[in-house]
Length: 221
Ligand code: CA
Image 1 (cartoon, rainbow, N blue to C red):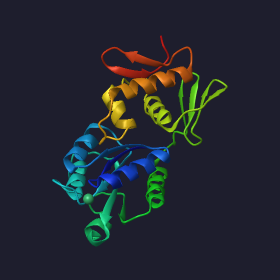
Image 2: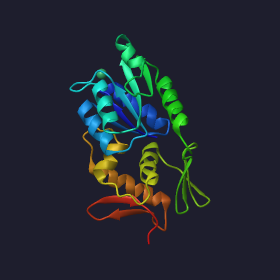
Image 3: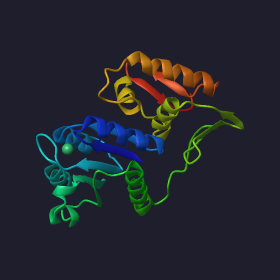
């Protein structure tokens, strides 16, 4: 799933993001309510993990605004135990589930998985572009019959590209989606990883450079 994490505790947010990535999801992390709201309105996320106590506008307000602007992504609310009021547990604002802090990461991943299953019409188990197949359950990549070994980061990068074949991703967007947002990231890193992926995937090339815009994956025409 493509997941937005809105959590102002940077360390916790990073842990969550890691756990989700390991479980095969794509996670984007933001630390402020306003930013979360903007991201959620701009991109169609499968799930938003939303902390209640946020600087600026809080999670309740974010959720209210989202539903008002007809964003129907599922929402999992995070809340400190003390804040667990009827307002939260009643899910009256249109959240799909909630989890009280502190929680075990496995619990969060399990809840996320359950939300995914509850709503999934047909889960995308395999992504395919031409003869390149990425099995999301096993995290295995094949070009035709040939198996290809990938590092975790390469896998995440390829997954982002393959989920939307033909869509052009800027270096900035890839950086944000594959590496952690709070890092001072290096755009060169994207180039390095793209070039590694290209080598591993082999010919004919599938990852295309679109001049001045970025990269996309598709069969060359
Ligand atoms: Ca908080």
